[in-house]
Image 1 (cartoon, helix red, strand yellow):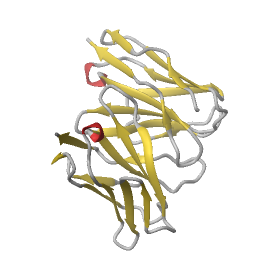
Image 2 (cartoon, one colour; image 1 turned 180 degrees about the vertical axis):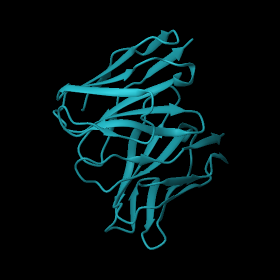
Image 3 (cartoon, chains in turn red, brown; image 1 turned 90 degrees about the vertical axis):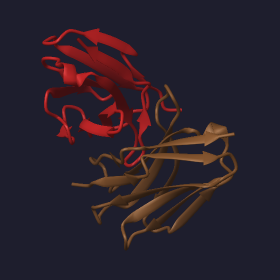
Length: 110
Length: 113
């Protein structure tokens, strides 16, 4: 089974803080993805990466950046957290077309 | 880019009834259409998928159909059970390296006994 882990299940931060969410996969997949999930809006793609040091913007990249220094690790960075970034963040990985999700990080920005 | 529309947003059925969820997509280059199920408090899990060279695929009580001409695909669940209650997401992609799945907004299915 593919194992995808995320650094925190729950996180509370203050407005303006820099926030790091980390995702690690153990299956040597090239592709890694970050989504946010909000009620009624489904899963929206923030950024994805198809190789080390490569990144592509998804549908909602504003306010976020990413880092992929090693193949197994993909980090999502909120440069200056805002209350509208309170959400569930899901990391995913897998071969082209197939995605295995991590358990998610519930981020609250106060 | 790809856009995936999913309907209905909520669906309530009685145990034993059938449930149908429909999705449409915009990019004619998309050729891979998976469905994910997300139970409350859990991560989305792949339950079934279909590729563009196939019109229908079945796996026990669930089936997917694809109409490439009309650019729509559907999930059918027969003999629904309470454990089918979950949020279901459809998605589409070109299934190539360097591309991502684009998801619909989800359907909350409630099966009452």
